[in-house]
Length: 512
Ligand code: AHR
Image (cartoon, rainbow, N blue to C red):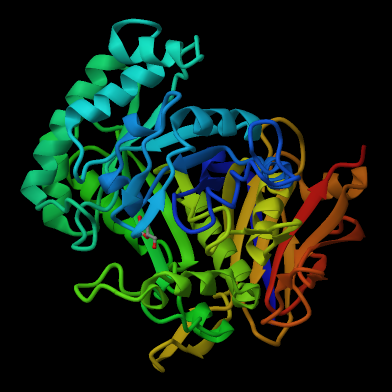
């Protein structure tokens, strides 16, 4: 069945923030130490950062990098990790020693090298409003007070002007150190926001929300007027305790209602009249949760093989297949469609663990999800336009991870244009495991299709598909990459074939 896809560049949904393609990095396993920060590596620069990893991050134009956690932050004290003498800490979240040689100053320098905005998550577990606001002093005051002067004494004359701050991480969760009740949370966030704002009234503040009504109503009642963002996190293939990755088809079941948490939070914000003043930061998302057994549980591992060495299983590259790429494209399409409310999304994490980049001593692997970010950042437009199909989208019936039959749409489509040039780009995801799908494009709008034909607009197809649904990349193995194919001159109603298990961007570019 050929699906007629209508996209009209005059009917604008909204201009998406580049921060929809943001990322997250935590002091966990090999994300920071032996990851991006590896002073002993011959591949590192004078500051100890892996230049190959930074180059890969720059290629996908990382717009914002959230740090230092995640659960790690809920017993982290930033003052131990600035200045010439660093106090190592025992990281009570992940139960390892952190040397604290990578702290705020190193993080800011890293963001400068990547060319991204910093986004600091503060300790609302064991921390206090004063400690959070002291951090804002250290980063953002010119030279007033103790902490700005400390930054200058550490060799950093100019303030860092960190714009984005999160008050706490998942403080609603029993697993989080210093977890809070809904009532405690609303008051703590309000008092923290007050002090942070008194230091820097321009700081943009976020705090953890939930799709749980009580939690959000308490949060927003107490401090809705102080917040610019509320933060939501979601992982779908839960593997924290048992590392059994869902299959391709099981992962397709996860695409059903993929933006449900956005819809629910939108409803709460609207009900409270805050939908125009607060945006959503989906600041941790990934198809697959991280594997770290016996640390978030009452029964804590005693033997390091119980809770520490299993983290190496996150590094098995065969896990990250076209399922991760197809799911991630569906998620990014949904965030683009909600770009009026979702202003930031952070892939968790960017490096190692479940990240889109995997590093080892002599190089890196660009996992399947990396190529989706490359496709969306570098080949898709920044303005979402209306898209409709004349028929109902085809569906597919798959078994979810619990063996239940689930019907999902087999195609996921998003139409865009650019704010600074002519042309259009349509993202088209074919979730089918083995079947190709055909679409025809009708793209009237700023230019009519007839004009496009006359002017000889060109159609280019960029595809991430791999050889099969379980294709993956690894050291000395690149099965998944962006393939480019010219489809020639634009013709009204032209048929375009989408390969099975593929993420596609179809560009319609006016003849130069
Ligand atoms: O599994 C990693 C954890 O996932 C992050 O530290 C936390 O924010 C989320 O629960």
